[in-house]
Length: 491
Image (tube, rainbow, N blue to C red; front, side, top):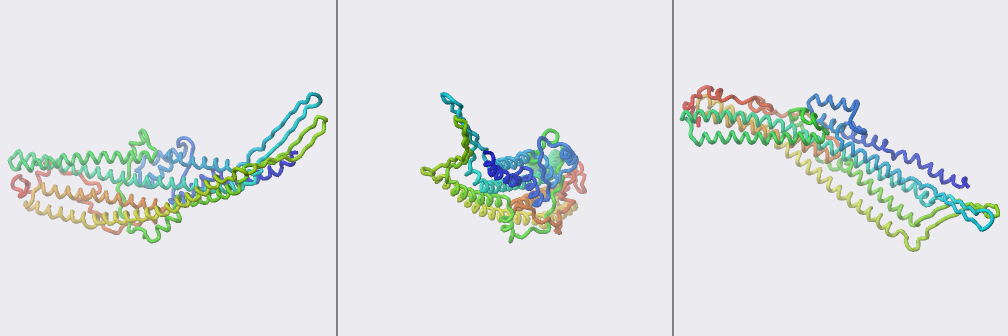
């Protein structure tokens, strides 16, 4: 009897090697390889909290300034939401392997006790033949679904990298802006204090005093908003980096923002590059393939059930009869019409989603590239035109001030305007790097490494990236020729 079951066991044993490619370990290895190929960054999965070498690496990085690249590496190590996403590989692996497992054979028996004589015993071992025959096709469906799951997970990893870059650039700009706002507040406070002294000496009108006081309070409000933006940007980055407790408040963001690279990649081939290497596009194609195979499976599986068995029975007289048995569902009422219709609809749905995603990807690439080009133009205009002009204005105003043709308030005003231009340049530079991260995300991989810009950088003396403190009120009053009413235009 048992020799008849050997073919079934051989078929099931031949599928074990096919299940090896559906393992969680192999899937995680492939996802890590895909991420490293596209970003140059390692990916690691672990259970529980970071420990051992991973925890030591995190602590070492916390003792150093956090650059954008280091922030991304930190998130790949310490972001627990990412570790949760990586477990989707294990879930998909289990579901795929379960889909290709052959059902266990069913052992059944009957015992009939006659009024006299020996008990009649009937035994049977049955296996669903239809499931066995369709297993190779189910395995191909499961493999396609598992591939799609791996691609979706890898796409989520790339999305996290883009989010960390955006948050890092925002935090860098917020930190530099906060420093600039402090400088503006110090200058406004000095001007307001000096205005009060001149007003008390009878050398300044009420209107001019109130104007300087309003400027001081406005600068204070601007600093408060800048401080709030800095805290918010740090908290956004804390979530992405997985920091809490002391870690969330002790890390330092590396500054300043990197200057503009020499050039950006051309748009011509970016759309086709995105279509060929975007992981969500690849996952959508795998879904179309999977639903196509599912439709084939539904078409072949129109017989509801079919099983074969070995049956043996011992008659009351002591003789034994053994032979085959079978069960075949007769498709009279249900030919699998609904199952095939559902499979067809899912395949068409997947095809339409793939086409819609292609349109969206092309649009994302064009939109991201337009943003990148515009932000480069804005930042370059600040860098090469507006900030140098502000420097020239400061130089000219300083000369007029030295010749007592302008007052100290005019000199402070043009310096504050130069600092404001520097702040706006920082915002433009931040938006450029965020746009560049968006382009990388849109094309599904790294852009060529940027070269250092050959354009002149903003002057460092009068509009520094980390400006010096403003002069104290008594220093302003002691400037050459600054003897209250002797200064023309002092009001």
